[in-house]
Length: 331
Ligand code: PBG
Image 1 (cartoon, rainbow, N blue to C red):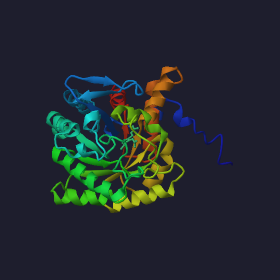
Image 2 (cartoon, rainbow, N blue to C red):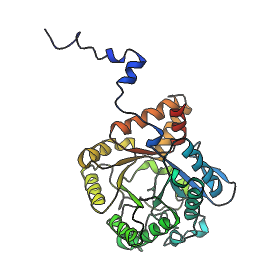
Image 3 (tube, rainbow, N blue to C red):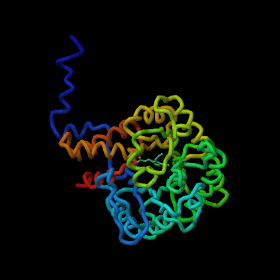
Image 4 (tube, rainbow, N blue to C red):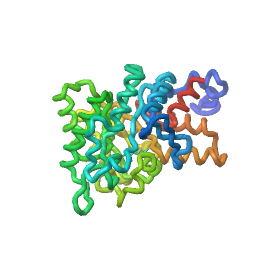
């Protein structure tokens, strides 16, 4: 007697809807999602972003409403990114330290509106505040200085924590910043403010629409290859994660998402820590572009990509499709 076909028929468990439901290995729910939101100055302002169809920048009053909708849809956390006015940007990004900057006002408005029903994750890096669009302080040659930048990032983190941020998410890729930020948060008494480290962040071509959204695309000279990772490297991502965990990160992020699914899986299998994937702006734009020319069904494409992250072991996904996806799941 052979142990194979026809006794073994893998199609048996797929034959009916109830059986497919019963054998499903992973599940994606609204609780797996983090929704990134862009903030702009003004009142009652919505500014659509051309390269991100369906995504807008919102003024503080409206971003608080969006946050309320997210919580109502079962999304546990939102991520905030400011579009700082040109006149508030500078060579050293000092606006990042202003306790009344756009980011801090948005954090407070959302915490007032949603309280403990919604977590607020804040991006730490200087690119929304610098006149040159780099994530840190630069020297005469435009090289991003590590240690001087870390000092500013620590101040930026404390500023966001004081405003009420729940998760500090450094996306800058400077060496040693997680330990420095953790130490400063502890000293300031923010012992329960988490750090989600953008541990494996790649110098990616998928960030274009995001740079439009925060207004840094036209400003950025050169690239970010001296601090963000080379897309050719995987072992190095594990070293980044190991260090960030050792320095006190509560969770780590892999970014972009689908093109780096192998990294997410290896990180999870190696370290057994909470791993999040950032399905970035260019990935969102790709799905929307495919759907708009009829190359695929938008809702199905969105849900299928989210399942990929869950299979890879991710605890959750930052995605611009979060509210849409949460509503699909609830329907
Ligand atoms: C910058 C930052 C970037 C993103 C999040 N934080 C862009 C960059 O590194 O240039 C990209 C997110 C996206 O593309 O959706 N600190």
